[in-house]
Amino acid sequence: MTGYDQLLKQCQLELCLEKMMKPVNSDKICCLTRLLAHYYTVTNDFNRSLKYYKKSINLIILTTNDNNEIADIHHTIGLIYYHKKQQYNLAVKYFKNELNIYELNFNDDKLQLAELYNLIGSCYLKQNKYILALKYYESCLFLYTQCSPLFNCIPIYKLLATLYFQNREYNSAIKYYQKLVINTDNDNVTELNYYYTNIAICYYKKKNSNLAIKYYEKSLLLSTDIFERGNIYYSLGDIYCEQVKYHLAIKYFKMALTTLRNKLNCSIIHRKIGYCYYSIDEYDLSIDHCKKSLIIQEDDDDTIHTMYYIIAFCYEMKNEFDQALEYYKKCLEIKKEFHLSILNILDSIACICYRKKEYNNAIYYWVKMLLQDDWKDKGKF
Image 1 (cartoon, rainbow, N blue to C red):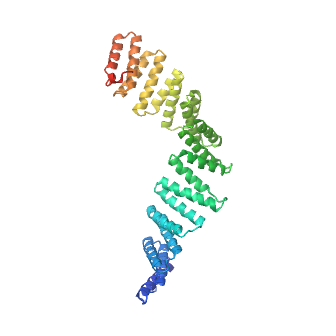
Image 2: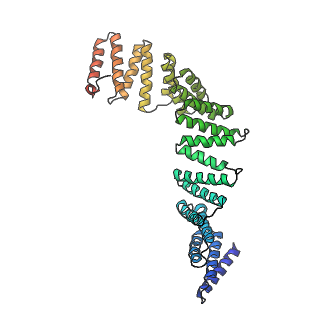
Image 3: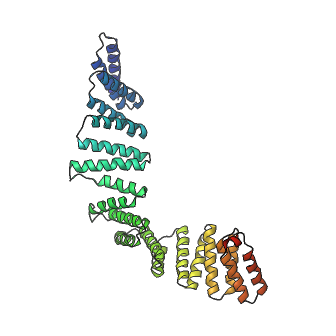
């Protein structure tokens, strides 16, 4: 960098001399100022570089007033703020100044404008301003396609798909993921698998379970990663559970159980399998999986309460009243505040006590039901 240091000194000296000359040669001062800015950029002194680039804009306005030259300097300043200083709000300011100059002067260079929209979109993306980023990326894509129908739009498709997905605009996300599928080679199974999975998630978020299943199954055909497959099995289990197709849900949850070894994941899957068996009156299997869930990982109070309730209900259906009472009482220990589920639990305990001919206990729990806070206002169980 020694050569540039010498050039800097020479340029600074020439600039000082020019400013002392009469009459002032504004064009030469402007050129030297811009040259000095360039040298400071090359030597990574970006603060001085920005200072002289900004001075050069004012000098150009006073001399040639060349709009293309001014736009070019705004672009250079924007790039320094973007790449070198990561000050994206200032980068946007100068890129937009450049854009305004082009628009005022009817610049019809579509490729140049597309690149500028791309940069502005990227600045907003870096600031997590997704809606503004989407606006500029869409404009960028429009201009790219006008430049040439053969233009590689894949990077923009990826950005738009991801942004719409993050912004929960699932229809638009699906649109761009499907474009990516069409434009991806069949041999690129990793990319296709990723797109199919994200399309499936979008359809699931839109409550379109059948299409979600369709794309999860497409993803399964391509995925070789055991953990990826486990996540897909789990998602399919969730969908079938919501569709009240409990046998299918159990099938996929069990497949997920063999692949997802994380302690929390296993606890959740056992819990969901337990719920499915409970829903189809397979009480022994329901109890088994619910207990496994509780042993592996203790969750929040609401989840534990649900597990205890299912276990208690299953024991009650099996006429194993002592075990049912044990778990119903565990439910009550968790749910201290008033909740409609407490009324059901108290009633279940009272009914079991009645069947066991423990009438005093039955009366005690039925009375307790009547004394619950807000009971009279509820008017029903």
